[in-house]
Length: 112
Length: 212
Length: 131
Image (cartoon, rainbow over all chains, first blue to last red; front, side):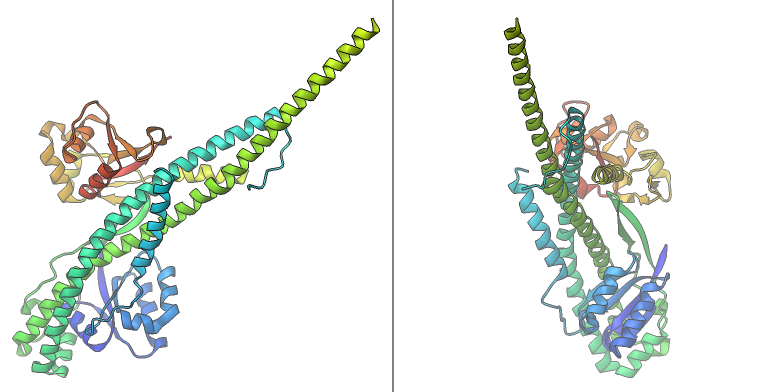
């Protein structure tokens, strides 16, 4: 199945990916508007991937995290740095790895 | 200390309990195997993510530099105009594949790199910096699509891993100990009743012998 | 008791991702979209590069014998971390992938080897839980 790409972020990010072929775009305006647009993208059956900058994701705060928990498998959502290269200090994946390593250590201890 | 189950101390009950411990133990062993397998899968995806992230983010910053150049030389308005005129119908093939029943995304990264004609912005706007910026972003997009596939898989596996771990814990630390306690209790009670019976019989025998 | 029922339900879910009918390597290679349908209705697609890699490891005649996905059987009886590969063609191919000698009809492999096998053949191998 073929899906389209959406991008949410600042002017440069949106322009760049539009040039690369992304179909849908939203430049951050206000939290409410952006959450609304993001919701549309997540509900769309056409969109397979949503690129969103870390900065905007942070602006959207808890509502964004909630949407990530609640969404279906598609569209995939990927957080990316903007032109400043900003990445947040807390890496969700690293947190998950830490928790998993906790499991791994438990397994080994019990004579695995 | 496990809270003991309230069960009548009969042999029937003992048999039932032993069956239940067997079932619980079997379930636990299998879920542990599943957990181990999930951990293998998880760490493999994580390993690939680390490589993929480094490459993708590097390419993204290259792309942004090219775009800044384009803004500077061609002008911001013209560049934005080009991005509006560009052919923006890029499609990605996404299907699902399965690891032990968990749906993970499988993305086909088709050829994203195009030439100026394919990109669609008017020929009058063609300028090498625009081409450059477009090309670098196309490359970045390709790498990011690959990364999205990996991260999607990682999160899905992690979620299943957590769920399985909770079940293993419930079996190992709550259910099985409770069942074992109940079994101990019944065995003890049955032994006691056996002994009491034995003593009673001996007394009766002694009484009967006295009568004679 | 509801705990027992929950356990039985969990056990019944363990293998629900496996297909009713597997595909032979020959069938998979000749299909435009090589895939199998699992018992829960999910569709699992094999990657072409893996199919071609497997084809290269076997004589042409064996392509009918190799059933996909190759099953990595996890059975607590074998001990934790040990898995079994059954099937002639399957064992042959896996022993080559792992560069391990085949001593019996069934092949036993250990946790680090399982990891390597899964890394090299992510879509053409799957786990099977046995008890």
